[in-house]
Length: 379
Image 1 (tube, rainbow, N blue to C red):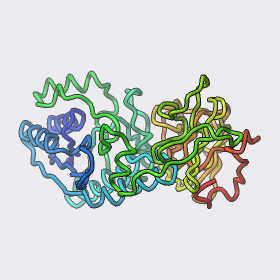
Image 2 (image 1 turned 90 degrees about the vertical axis):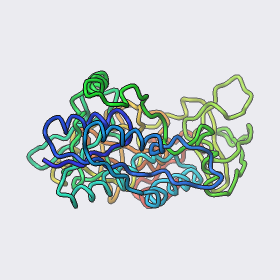
Image 3 (image 1 turned 120 degrees about the vertical axis):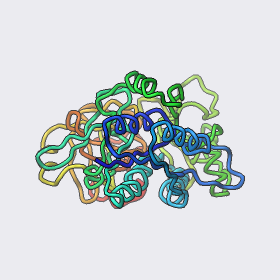
Image 4 (image 1 turned 135 degrees about the vertical axis):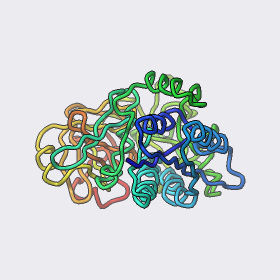
């Protein structure tokens, strides 16, 4: 079989290419050049730096496979970076990896693979199970490396064109394969955090990217009392505690952000709990018939990359859905993804628009009209 291996210069993607080659497949390596260059921007943790490209080429040379670099900087800026910057300016907390996977890694790369009569293979930790109604996305054997949360929006068409060879492996075994195959990246550390955001943090990146600088605003408690000031809503996220600059014996957390007046509500951690959420822009990895059956009963919903999926009821509403959790959940941040699971199977998900509770807890968390929430950009 012919495969396009998505190479990043890291251990995981390199082992994927090595295992496919060892199994006798016809393998071609492609690396996407993603992180855009911007004058004056701080040095980023580039996932596609020159060093990474050289590492990927060295791996391809070691394996004896062709290797190409595809420039996708313009698409990355348009589909990932600019929405990332815009979301933070609007007081939301985006997940750029979801957009990158959807539009580039499982968009453009799938197109390249199909044009070559090949399947795409990546180093993501996930499993594809071929069920009676088509391909299914499942959590991997190594749950500590699970990346299905970031893959929920790639769509059924892309899912049917990709393989995840590391789905049944754990990280120590992947490192062992790298050593056995003699790959030059065997000791390379794993990438961390958002690939294009520098050490100065996302706030500095946002300011330098759009050139708008910082717009300070007020920090207020749930009763609306002024307790301090912040540099800008783009520097904050719901659930944040550190860096607020408020001198108090109480631990204060960001409860809600309003970019319209630059106000940020802060309060005790208990105020972060909510019984449900409204999500928009849903993308599903199951057919309508499957969803009708699976969503009729309890499912699990994950609201952050490191959140343990919680038992919930999910009701589809137009282009989105609403979630009622069995137990209150903490810090449901607008802009993050709410991803739905049935046991190990990822059914899809959407973007959190607002948290809601049966009873409002204060002016920072007004009651939400669920029927109209899906059409509003802010609540």
